[in-house]
Amino acid sequence: MNDILQQIMNMIENTRTVPSISSFSMIGFTVLLIFGVINCILGYRLLRFWMMLCGFVIGAGIGFGAAYTGGVTEKYMYAVFMVGAGVLLAVIAFVSYKIGIFILGAGIGIGLGIYVFHPTTSLVFFFCLLLGVGLGVLAMKQAREVLIIGTSLLGGAMAGFSAAKLGGLADIPYGLGLSAGFALLGMLIQFATNRRKDDDEEEEYEEEEKGYRRSVRKPNRNTTTSYKRSSRQKKTAPKKRSEQRKRAKENSERRKRQGKRSAPERKRGDSRKRNLVDEEFERVQESEYNNYGFD
Image (cartoon, rainbow, N blue to C red; front, side):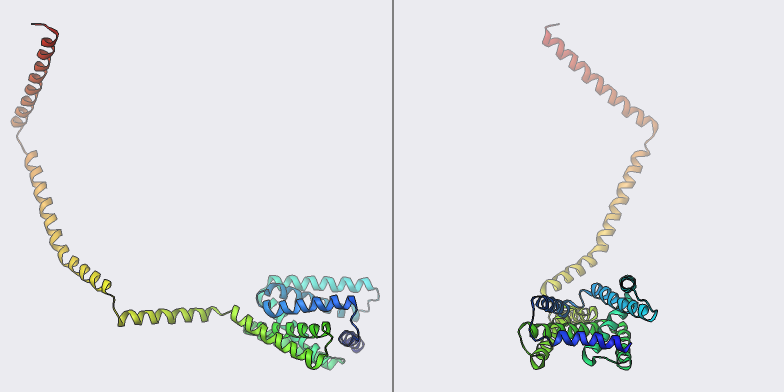
């Protein structure tokens, strides 16, 4: 285990202390710079992506450790173990939000611990693992704050030291200063663009309360006049209702009186209507005969 850690730290140290940047290393540092800036600014926004990425990296490390402890000698079997475990943990991180948050927080903690402490022994590496587990548990409770600070620090370190390498500057103090600047800028941007819902609700409540106080202190004329009109309407409404009821009763009584007429009266009325119709029909016929010249 110590040999593997020593080899990994030597590889990291060699990349950091490259005297002259080749074209291949320049491309690598440019990718790290872009990746670090994105992580600084959009670390919390791209939460699912970072959870899957950290899950894949941690799973690949677990697969490598399992293959090494199992005594695997073939190189392609190392790749199979690493890819299989990485894909499995990435899928788990994507499906389960809580597990993904823990994996992302643990990955940030382990990454920062390795970058700061450079573990070459099992004890120091175990301390980095404890740091990652602690940050993962804390991220499950305070996801917004921990992830914003963690992604800003990790992205700032990547971007700052990569920019220093591309510019031909020393890691200390230029790389460290650029890393701190990127990290602070990323924190400010992320905290400003990823506000809590509780804070927004509190501000809306305060604005509503202020508006209510103003309306109570300075009542509007339109509201007072409308209130007076509504009060007048409420007072006159019972009178109008009583009048409408009286009219309805009178109309119903009239209809009842008209319906209570005797049968002879009804017959007389019907006969009168018939006589009038017959007389009118005879008049129309006489006029037609006169028009055609019949006597």
